[in-house]
Image (cartoon, rainbow, N blue to C red; front, side):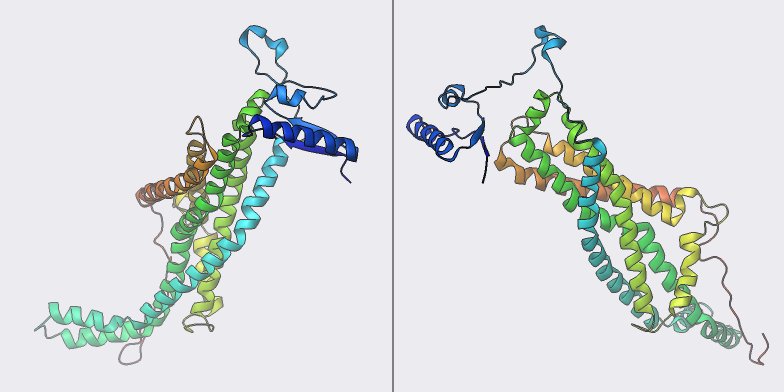
Length: 369
């Protein structure tokens, strides 16, 4: 049985006769059931008709009142760390299945396309066509073609396996991993945050925080920003790992039987775990994944904050437009920022060539190495 009943603005939008009936109803219910009412209303005269036992009035502090008239609310029970951790749990654990499934599908599709393309490419024929065209009439052409045929056929399969592993690893770790994650989270996190703050603004909750002496930015934006900044790189790494795993499955016995899992991960190891000597730190693939995803998320949260606070008098009907604007603008900004990150990546000093050294062999016509 309820002992206390909370009512928020029960007289809003009612004409005087109906408001009087609501007042009489509340008094009768409280008396018959022995309950207490905690009422919040801007209509002081109507609230006074309920004969309240106690009344508390909230007013904005005026400059002439001085500091004595201003008392900041004690909200220590909801500390910053608590609010940030709740946001992180929402952003990470609810988004993780979406990220995993999206990257599983993308990783499988891209791996199949790449494996199929590599199997279809006839390298010997391409090189032979090129040489025939540019060395036509050269008496050494038959010997050159024989040499090329021997070298390429003996090493083509190994080169394709290495190319397959490096392509999958580089594409997802450096580019698709953070980009696809950011586009998905622009709606999942950016849109969600913009909708929350817009709804708070449209229902005067932001103004209430100001009345209580609490900064709206510190209360809403900073915990969400910290949670999103932690969740985005972790989700990007999770999605990248799922995509790389799908590359091993598709390229191995579960798909095109092109490369064994052991060789796949062996070729992937230098890209993921070993930074070549002389390579710029900002070109190290795992770090690229992290700082790109972090940059995308900071951009998304900034745009979501601006969209949710852009209107001074926000109404509930404006909330869907705020969410849509935040998501669309965030996605556009992410695409432009991705172009900027790519420009930075290609202009940095390179270090060793991708893939390192490769072991190739050639047995001549007489069987000599």
